[in-house]
Length: 502
Image 1 (cartoon, rainbow, N blue to C red):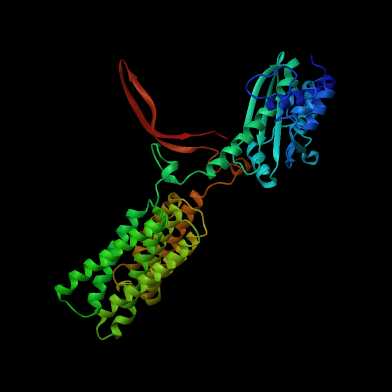
Image 2 (tube, rainbow, N blue to C red):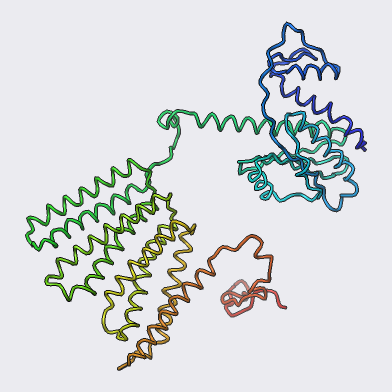
């Protein structure tokens, strides 16, 4: 068994040997000689004190400027709880060895950040601590395996989302040497990775950098979606202009359709070439195009058409005003940052769900479900899209969550409407119709809330914090067994219970 105090006493010499080995070039030099370009004057003095050969003054090079040392935290060596009593002296000596080695390799060891616990730290927390403090965290661990020791070194550096790990199984007598060499190699890999990242940032533009690769990152992946929406909306603008003018002449209609569609397509191509437009960005901008346009038509038709001399002309102009306002607001939302796929779907869903809720609100106010709630649907579509589009710029959601909420809202609303349908049979009163609308709206909101609650991702450790609602099992309908008669087999169908019986 190795003497821990002997291990601690040889820490400085072993760490110095590892540092000098890292400085030697690939071609072997005569034993005891030092490379003039890689050894500092103070290194030469240390080598002389250690028994090495002092350099000749003729080969001395001007000293390099001193580099600021990086701060590092060497955590206490982790050992298994059942082997803590046997491995504690060896772990204590390894702590001192790694601290001395880190200093000899140019690190400034922060002893205040060391935790006395010898339990293995959580790797995710270790990476987060390194990122928040901008320090190097060195986490060693030991595991006794007969006459050998399994040494594991983990290195977490600030600004990195990865953890560098080295694991070796060595004899106890070689533990000191291997620990110093493993730490040296980890730090060398870290420096090489940082240098490679810095070099890649200074590379040539993509036409030169990507030459010879099988695939290159696509730019403006939403170009097709943006072009399709812009072309259709451009044609709608031309049609709206023709209808607003009061003309029915096809000789004016078709040129306006062609010009509008062409302007929309050309504008989309220019925008996609100027900015990097993603698929989600294009759909988000499309939601700002169509839902406010639909809302403008519905609001005018249900609210102002009865007071206009020619409602058909002014309705198309109202749609143009709504579409222009929606495109402007969507562009302002995209100026805040890239849009996610869930955010784009949220904006589209907000317009549709708002349209239905607005219709229900108008029905509840009038007490008459026989009349189409045109104005309410228009106001609901406009306000629903505006609220969802604003929330999409701030929330991080996934498309599956939005789809689940939509399905839950539809199922809840339809189910509640079906259950409350006896209220609107034959000749219902206004109170009965309002009660039916209220039940439908309540089911709509309840279904959306339940779907959101079920699909919401659980927080870390939430599953183990409390008992699960299905800890006693769940009913099972299907194949519960098998019938065998000779060589013939048939599944047995039935109802069963799957889970633990309390």
